[in-house]
Length: 300
Image 1 (cartoon, rainbow, N blue to C red):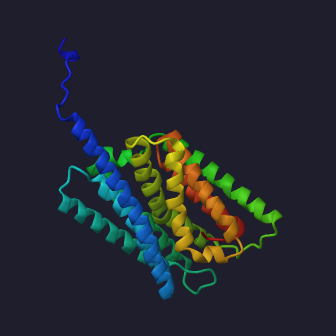
Image 2 (cartoon, rainbow, N blue to C red; image 1 turned 45 degrees about the horizontal axis):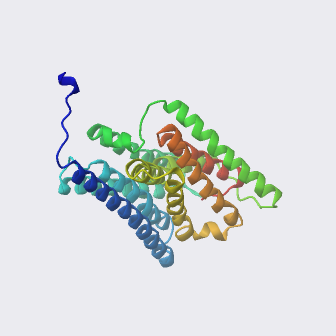
Image 3 (cartoon, rainbow, N blue to C red; image 1 turned 30 degrees about the vertical axis):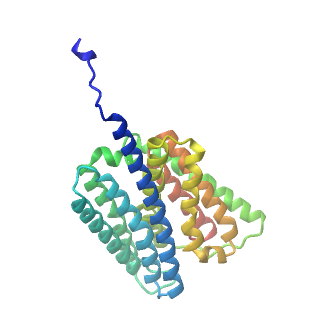
């Protein structure tokens, strides 16, 4: 009979309310982070630093901060406040370093730099996954709650890759019938670098923050419906493209690309809902951008 005995804490109502307040605080902090990131990146664009420092600053103010903030939340509540802030700050600085090294080693098409250095820069950016392996070993349950799980990862990558490629092909066909001009075709080293950038920094930051942390806060902890979760996450996801990627709007493909960016954001929320993982979301993100780069010659 002892197995049927349950102990209910007398303060369970207050604890439930406190957890809800904490969730709302984290959700507001996430929104503030995205808005401040976009505004800061806009200032960088206005100051117009030379390349590659402009792109490095954009990456540091968005992707690196997004990953660092997600790691910080994963370290709660077992670590002390001072220690988890130190860990998250150190993680962000390491990611900024990888972005800087990757950007400095990148050889633009037609440049004089050897493609071998571009590949080295690609490997440096992929090293960000080592940080997540460390965080997984320290707080496995919290990291997996963000959707980073290796369960059925091959099926996850395949599903997300096919979905993202399908959206990219649809954009290509739409642009073809609309008479959209193609950009310059990238060489193989550029393709490898861009895939590493999306998988190691840009796409990883978006998926961890929006489909990882954001989805968990709204869908799982606040109990919102699918569309009540997907809509605000989509708006926050598209905001950096509108504010910090103004060059995308200026390009011929700009007006065509932005609705598809929103579509991919919605699709990734559906993949997160269905597969309970951000791995297919990341694969979808990378595949969409890869098709856009190879098929149209544009980088979003």
